[in-house]
Length: 116
Length: 115
Image 1 (tube, rainbow over the protein chains, first blue to last red):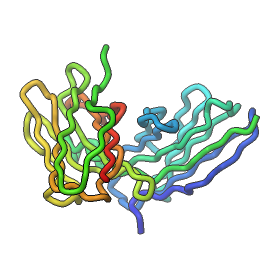
Image 2 (image 1 turned 60 degrees about the horizontal axis):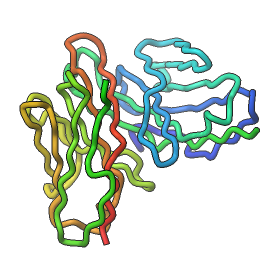
Image 3 (image 1 turned 90 degrees about the horizontal axis):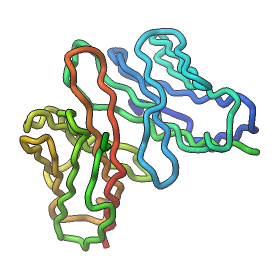
C-alpha cells in the first residue's frame, strides 16, 4: 500500500463547475497536509495547507481533512482553464513530535483538465 | 525576495559519469530538501539538510549524496550514473522555525538526462 494515494486521473471538469480531488494516507501519525499544484514543465507550488480536522477555505479553494478516515481533499470552485494542472497531495509527520523533519511524502498526483 | 535557485536547469550525461547539482535557498531559509521526480514514481524524497547536517534521508542508494554549506546553499551529487537516474531533481527550502509546520518552496528543478 502506498503511503499517499491519489487517483491519477485525468479528471475532466467543465469550466465553472466544482473540481474535487481526493487523497488518502496510511500513516495515522501524520499531522500536516498540503496540496501542491504543478503545471506541465514547472515545479510544484503550494496552494493549500491544512493541519486540523474540518474545512479550510482560501478563495476558490477549500481543503478538507478527516484524520479518522485518513482522508484529505481539495475542492476548486468555479473552475477555470488556468486550473488545469497536476495536483499533488503531500503529507508530513507530527508538527511537534517530528520537529525539524521536513520530509514530505507525495502522492503521484491527479491530472486535472478544465474544459472550456 | 529571490526564490529557490537551482543550477544547471538542464544537463545531459552518459552512463557511468557523475553529476553535481546546486541549490541556493530563499534567503533566511536554513533547511534544504532534495526530491527526485519521474513520471512513474512521482516525487521521491532524497534527503534534507539543516545547518550543514543531513537530518533525513530517503531510500536511495549511496550513489546519491549531498551536502550543505555554511551559507545554506546545498549540492547533491550522483555518481556512476544509470539510465534510471534520468529525472527532474527538485530542491526545496523552508524556514525551519520553532513553531508550526514549515512550508516547502520548490526551485525550478534540474532536468537530468542520462544516455
